[in-house]
Image 1 (cartoon, rainbow, N blue to C red):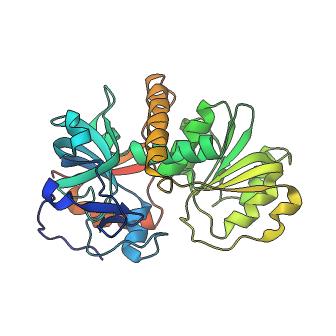
Image 2 (image 1 turned 135 degrees about the horizontal axis):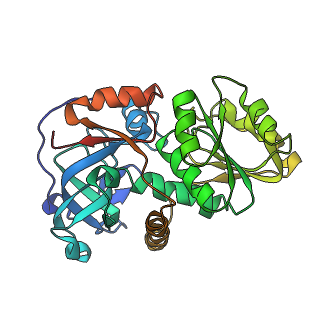
Length: 333
């Protein structure tokens, strides 16, 4: 599905008069305003993630027009910027990149979530910092309302978003049970402060019940959904929250019997708010994450860095769930 070819580098002229939709950059239409919160980046490193697989397959929740450049975040030097971002010219920033000008290219376009790299953070770590950190904070803390003393289950805990939510829940004083597949991922999540249920060794529901002495949990943080989504609610206590923040295992309808147990299904995704509210949430989240990084309570979980020509192999590993944390690409290689 991926093709390596030369395409024109994006410039400010290309972006003038364009707007932003859920699927990425779009041509202007009546009643809409130009999108004016962008920077053009000379890229250093970019992260790959499961959405790069699902977008290519056409199974992503939001349709993305083709052709496009893959990659949703990375780090680079600002070489051009919209008027409101010109203070960043020449600076090293981490940014979210939206199609068709994704991060897996020598030159990419960062939008909205654009921040100077925290002091002391490498390009590799910075490339995989924003999306899991911001999405994880939004899902676990803002929408999931995880608080000290609660018990939290994190599905897909070995992945980029999962490992971010494990750290954030631990940092907020929760007891965390990470659901993973395999000993390597189990060891990884234990290093982040979680207890572990290995679904390759035991039934997930029975494993969580054993760890909690059948007392159940307060919150399920679920970037997986699929077959396990309805079953895992068997371990939710009354008034428990099931936070749906991804669909790595596929999207399925949810049984309506959750109301019998006073459970709450919580949707969590970034990008659906009005622009002013998005800007406020982004700033609030980033300030919280930088504080946690400074305190040593949160870190990017980059597990490996690969050469640019290895992107297809890295995405194949992601699709087969053979990766942990974030996988980063050296775009210059």
